Length: 275
Length: 172
Image (cartoon, rainbow over the protein chains, first blue to last red):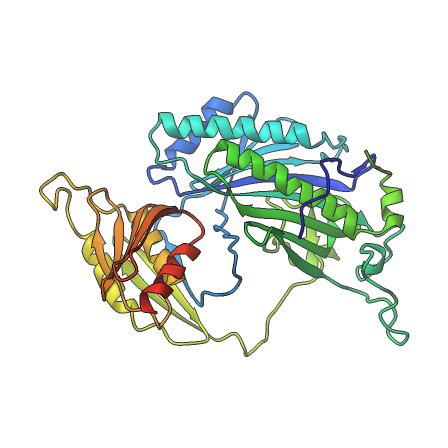
């Protein structure tokens, strides 16, 4: 997938994005223990006053070649270390920490807060990154080595207008023709996953993963198609600059890919504006 | 109706509390999902090894024995203040080995390093490849072919293609 042609990316006045996730995978922090979740919380508690404990997320390595290894190793810890959420008072922002990941989320509140736009979310992520790195270094919890970064946009497309059924991919993707068959008509239910290689022949930068799946909203059981776009890849340099660079790089592919893949009809609903 | 549906997140989706539910549970009835599993001791912990579509490779048991022997070395095992092998580094070293090896490659010699890491060593026919795993996702490899006067030393993290390329050179 060639790089986006310029820095001017398409934008939408009413984007369907309901959640943005910025994520960095770290080399496991060898000296991190359960007590350190609480110590870290002390440093951010005024902005993130509540916590929840969750199971950890496995490492996901975006490698140049897919499916080469047929032997895998899973470490079985007798005392598994959890992932801990630190949640903002309005529930829209979240820092997640585990021994080998730092994640920053923005999500739309039930009250429908406007999307704060990417620069503000990236700034929040980098503040969390700086806080956590400083905490790890000052407490000597292991070498702080970022390995891979990730940008995810989660978009929810309600089945109440342009998109009609769980199988109506033709209303979502411009490359999907419909009806599928005169006999069968539009599918009642469909899901799709695609991935695109990022970078050049000389330099592998990761992949853009695109998934669309049927979902029900929790708060009102409303039907929707959820379109998730994730750019994930290794870092050019294993430091803050490398992380920040990939986050911006990946976001360009997410946004331009979203605009390239979705139909013009939906983009009119989202009020596309081009710089 | 949604209450009857599976509520767990699907792989690779939201990292937040999901504001949605899956619309249908996914159940695989495929008979093509043949896997073999072994749970083995590795240092102070255990690992689950899973192989798909074939038997466990012939080099694996010797490698596990050597890794466990390295892990059992006490502090100062070299009488020059060596550190014991770090458990996380040990686990990562095994993960690296499973990614770079295939059945056509010779089994490496496996040694502890004085800094608490693991080194894999291949040495034959005036060719030498050393892969030092210093910490999880941090290491370097050194290759020297005396026949061609070909020498390379590079760090590695996530990508191991350089090591695999040199292993291919080694057996060529």
